[in-house]
Length: 141
Length: 144
Image (cartoon, rainbow over all chains, first blue to last red):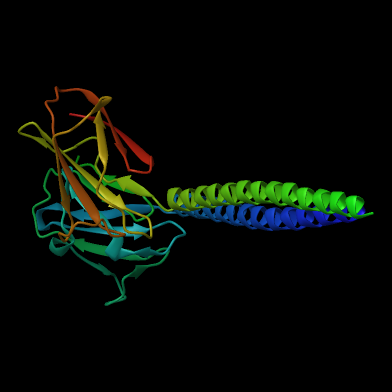
């Protein structure tokens, strides 16, 4: 009788250990995933909050304008999207460069970005959207 | 003596069978729970990495010949499918044309997905809701 109880207890103990191990692993993975997701969300919000791009000057007849990075994030100018009167201008039709740093694609805080669209922007509304989702708009007077 | 021995053996076998059955049930249930928790962790990861934005200028959304043009940008680090549902003023739009930047069938990170939505719209304020296949959504209120 005693042996039966011992054998049953041993089998059930092993089963509980296996159950605990698999559940503990899964819950631990879930916690890591949730923490990583929350971290990504926080980083995104922080990036968006510290991104600020402003129009410094606009040469509408020549289709050019200068933007200044007044935020704390480093902007990759390849990721900037330009909308003229609500229409997205393909990247191949827009040339951008960081003033004073030819060949660089990164605009640091305080850097100016020259943008040339090759189209007449007279009377056009121009909107720039950054990779963080924040935007700035030039509204003609 | 022999009877007692047989009885004990039968008790032993019965106890082991019952314990093994219970152990099997417990292990099976815990494996199912672990799988579903793992699936939920994958879903949380996918949701967190399904970021996109509507690029449109809300004050000037292109609307020509009954077709509204929407620009969506993939901000996530993964390739997303282009099965995107568009709701205009709360109604699901079925007449949509999807154009991916650079062609192809997959929406790569950093790329723009252009959607032409064929829908008659009157002048005034409108609401647009774009929903990905995993439920991540973005909204835009605009004026025509």
